[in-house]
Image (cartoon, rainbow, N blue to C red):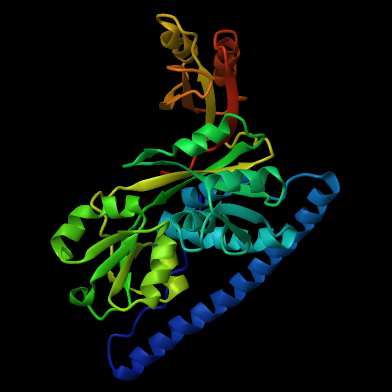
Length: 375
């Protein structure tokens, strides 16, 4: 249970001078707290650097997603405000990113260029103290991760309105990388431009999916503007920064990188639009207490085969959180099934279900067990 925060100095009720004194008292208290926070941050960093040396001696990975998930869960569990849980997580992710960089500066491959939502996912998970390596295609992300040029690879898996990312699922069937973590990113679309107002916008650039996700807003507010699809939202922002009368639909990271102002925010037609990403690496992640397990399997070509594949989960009380079918590359009208389970592969019910499934499925590949992203 967290201790209650100290009671702030009470404001004086009479006289401007008393008010100034109260303001100074609050500021003096903040200055003292800041000095203590700084000392504690450096103390934390000292421990992190020592842990990094121990990990280097033992050959263990610098980044432990299950440990990070446990720390954040305890912090939000102890949070009594006025900061929200989201604000607390944001602050401590930055702290952990800086401390982790003292152990090892990670290299993270993602779908570029800089300013994409994939880039935003990297910053959400790892903070700014990493080397973010932009890749042109999802295939390149996998090659960079598999070739050891990046410590981790961040790939999009599914969007809440557009569905699964097929190329990611296809490559997960053969890669030697496994899922270490997941990221859920709220997709906030903004109209970015150097134009003075909406009336001055004549062209809107963006990725085709973003144009589709904002089609109703565009029809209402920019019906006379020409919509131009480009390869990415970041490329749209780059063009808008250099072209008079142009605007881009993109995220806040792109606005910061290309020096654009938001003429309108939250213009997506679906307010709960979000994208899920996987962090791929070479380590096996221990249980955090709130985990998912992802796998891909095939079914024999006979009646009731898919039902038989799902039976082990029902027998052992394992919940499925996602079930996605995808055409297999091995033959006409053959399918693979991608499944997300609640729980870690070392949890007894999940382990028992997987053992039973292995004797039924013609093809079964465990893609990874990892901490579930906060909802």
